[in-house]
Length: 225
Image (cartoon, rainbow, N blue to C red):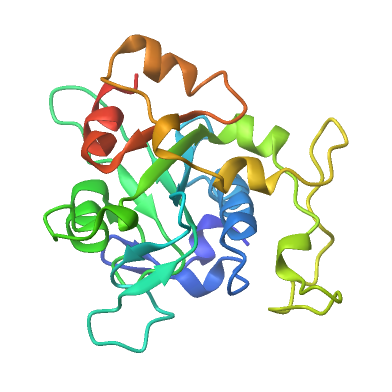
């Protein structure tokens, strides 16, 4: 499919024309990063894309405007969630960074500030156990290193909790067959303090990127060069 074949509504793309398997958000985002590059929506090497895992120690994170919700406000208490953030152009009049969330009912893609306000809702008072943390990984690193054999989607006797995608499991370039847990296992102590060049530089080099708090999210992307 070429870029011209994608249906556009205003500034949004038709989400149905991207690969999506319910409950496999990490694989959906893996494929999304590749598709955005091949379709010319993002850099061909995905260098302007970042994969963001959202979770916490309790594996209970509230997110709003999720299609899986049966509530009017779209809230879902996920164990973890994965989105893609696209860094946009800089200069005198830079475009806003964009969030690509295949499971969201917000525009696709959605400006980062609007996504944070409507989906993360940092001003909404929640208990400390629902505090959300964000592991940010540069997409080219993620595409080389990520692997999942989908073991997390099987019960104790090997039955599927949710039906897997039809394509083969993702294997890392080095032959690793499963490291998903390394990405979504996020603790408060993993979060870096402050911001700055050292932290933003690490996101481009470390396999597991960096972990930040929700209050650091927008500032972090404002400093990405």
